[in-house]
Length: 278
Ligand SMILES: C[S@@+](CC[C@H](N)C(=O)[O-])C[C@H]1O[C@@H](n2cnc3c(N)ncnc32)[C@H](O)[C@@H]1O
Image 1 (spheres, rainbow, N blue to C red):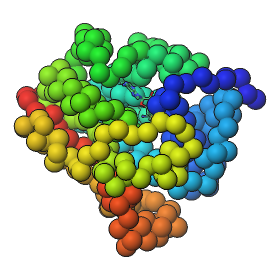
Image 2 (cartoon, rainbow, N blue to C red):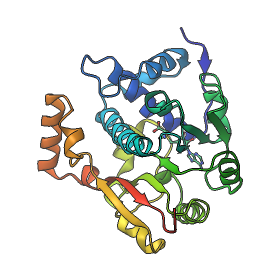
Image 3 (tube, rainbow, N blue to C red):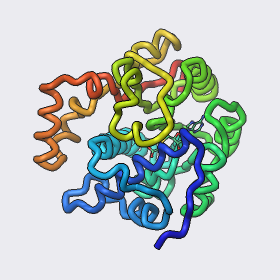
């Protein structure tokens, strides 16, 4: 039953792509994430999701989320009462998958997204939604005044939509307010950003990426002391994760690796440690 019409801003609309990816994944017998919540949310939102049917990017989004999940799960295994901040949370459901029962969690996004998010999720003593742009400084005070850390910052499919000057400002803010903290983020290279009008999913919406980045080493030039802990493409996922994927998907990824397409090789999923003492 359709209950919620969506009126989202241009970049905000992109949250519906990974949401639908997780819902479609959930329909498969060998689902990667098994996100029943995404399926329920999609069913209750009045939006033409069919435009994304059968797009390879849906699988890419699920794989990206799965890798970010692994990084957050590793952090929470070491720090079960640690704090996770989802920057540009959209309608993601990572908390549902990974909460240890002691985790402190913040979901940050722009006003219209948080309004929509409140239709499906509620704040609890352990979980707080924050209405802000990541470029604002006040949200960091909200987090640090309510949670001592250690922190994990996840910015999944968010920063490429910002202008480079804004990304630089955001990274400087994060390094200043969360020194030594783990940050997961994706980067899209020039071969992706310059051809995005032909991108299977982005061509179906109005939002466009603005920040082109050759890889996480560029970030270390901006922020001396930043350490790159891991960087993967969808065709070079960590072996333990790759080996859990359905055989048909492993074959598809092997084919992608052989083709070395810029659209795949220049899209990097990165785990970095911000400079400074943690
Ligand atoms: C592609 S969606 C990803 C959503 C979510 N991270 C996921 O993986 O399902 C991009 C998200 O970034 C958010 N976003 C874009 N610019 C932002 C900003 N300046 N501050 C906070 N969130 C932002 C959008 O509103 C949207 O929810």
